[in-house]
Image 1 (cartoon, rainbow, N blue to C red):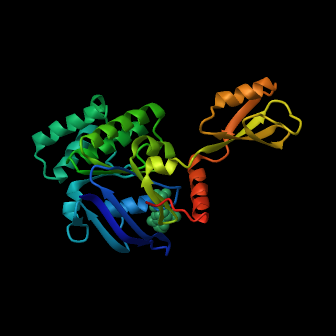
Image 2 (tube, rainbow, N blue to C red; image 1 turned 60 degrees about the vertical axis):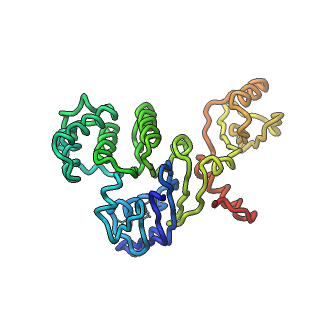
Image 3 (cartoon, rainbow, N blue to C red; image 1 turned 180 degrees about the vertical axis):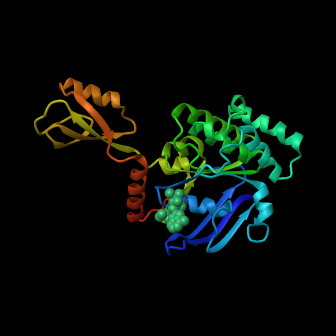
Length: 311
Ligand code: ADP
């Protein structure tokens, strides 16, 4: 059974901009699936259409076999949505946000209260149950959106950038909870532009770019191509050309800037040791590209070589 099937989905916004250009996608029940892509790729548009926040231009959506056009209520009942924008009544206490949501799904009041307590505890918000929404931190609001999306026990949970703006510690706790939900049988689809998030959570991933699916693959297989990472090092003192560092591929961009390519089998410690032996001190360092940009470059190159990433 598929949790979600998207066929030939097109979206043209009122401005005339074509945000989705014929997207096909299938997500199996039980999967933990990432929609990965740079800003503006069309991820939120796609998710917005599946969760009935955005109208499609054409195409077909089915959720657990139910067609969105024919059974919008059935689709809504089987999915929980965590949109990017906070869309609550800001003066409502936390617990009421969740209880009211249960009301929309016809869940009786005592059961709604019990579920609200369950999910607020799970998401570490129970102590804040009487706080007004507007007094919560960004991370707490995000978790409240998840509790609210779960209260009718959807079989499919869809999250749009669930950890954007959330600090690292809370992000890890959210990841743990999402893993637990998935292990308990909830199918999860999330959008992210953090490669690390997809890598850490998701079994399968679709890469979306300029409104098209660029690749669909197991996360592991997709990332296996990312063998080389390029670092830019700013040196404390100028170095003379040429600089040979056995075992490393080094380019001298200028007298105080080196670019070093590190294979995944090499560690930064080895690099710093080798530099240290040459008396070279590094003042600061950055990644030349983020890994997502690198992934796109490698996909383009693989495409040129005639191989394909898409499964
Ligand atoms: P992502 O979630 O991948 O960042 P979006 O789906 O938000 O991408 O946006 C895809 C493209 O559609 C972007 O170029 C964006 O500017 C455009 N877009 C999004 N919403 C609207 C809108 N309401 N009207 C016009 N263009 C929009």
